Length: 422
Image (cartoon, rainbow, N blue to C red; front, side, top):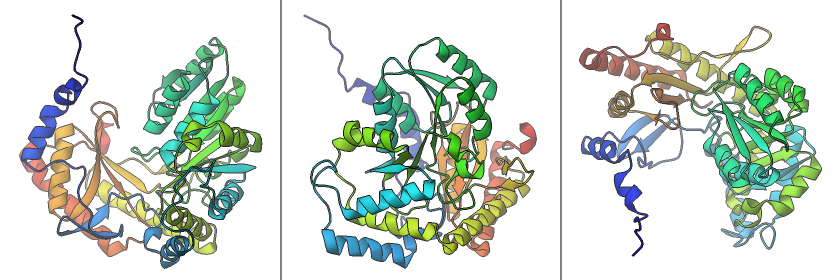
């Protein structure tokens, strides 16, 4: 008789089982908490008032009446869903308008809208690359990028986060692999909140004949004079071959987009399996994203962007003043600095991060917790993020909660990492 293994065994024996059990016993699991109100600066969660420092609603547009009205109008006109893929019965004029306006915003020839941001990366990378190609990724890249590489079956060569010397080594190795080379990096890294050194990355990609793709999920709407992301901020738009973004951050909806040359986008339109074989984005999601794009591209959108950056700088400085290890604002080539809406606090230890999350939650502040593999081993952090619609009084209340939690926690468990720890 052949010996077989129960495929369900991994669900019962994986490395997190005991940690989850212990965390549940003390109600310190920071995930799947129940939200009971809109994604505003202050929310109701599980029967209590919480300051929301764990949302990607960077411009606060989920509560904008024009975005809400656009969702209602789309439902009234088209119903709740289209019940088919874009290839068949699922293309609306809303999809086409959204693609046209996103291409204009990015300054690219064309754009293709996917149902989710994850599918956008999966569909682009998994279609453009093949088994004979090489893709080079930053170790901090989003999981959807890595999933796209797996789908493509291309050879993946990773380099340590933002290490340009290691990127060049990977490019040198890729020259010997044969096939095409694609470098894929986040513009703004989702956990660390820092920005990729795109001018230098573009230099290296060009030197070794590689194409460059930038994931602008956390940059679109929040960086650059017109809010077009890290590529605009760092003046490399003409040197980036493909740009990806999601609608679930600044655009207050759900979906994703790939923008680039018309012939490449048309190839994806007829070959990308995650695009062809997924139901189209529902009318409410597409309509609200389109309304959000139009606000972002207006003067009002630029004012929201500036307010968000002010709030990010304020929270960063406030947490830093408590002696917490907070990532520095981004230094630009002209010597100025710009804050991204992501303000992570390094904790290092997984259990300490969970316990700090619980204490903050009980003090009425909700933050995200990032543990390995979302961050490197020993790199656990509290990921805070701000919205343009946070006011100073609310941020001050959150900073005071951090101060109280830090004082009590360190009295019992010892000091937390500080900026001088490196």
